Image (cartoon, rainbow, N blue to C red; front, top):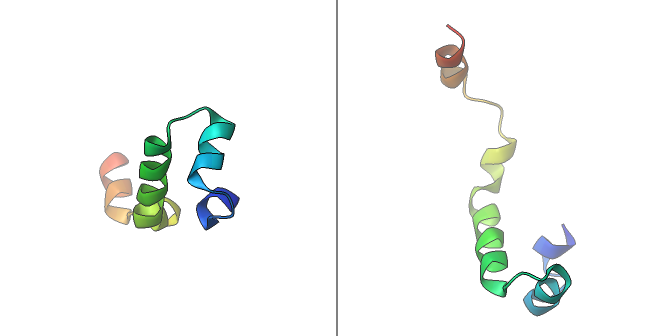
Length: 52
């Protein structure tokens, strides 16, 4: 979470992980945009379709 909250700069995170800053930024933006969906309860329709 420290990385998401911005307690470290993008450059610091990039150096620590050995990953170029672009994928780190894209991942952060994706998590901020759609992260809530990861923690929502599953959709009942999907459950019904998967297990008739």
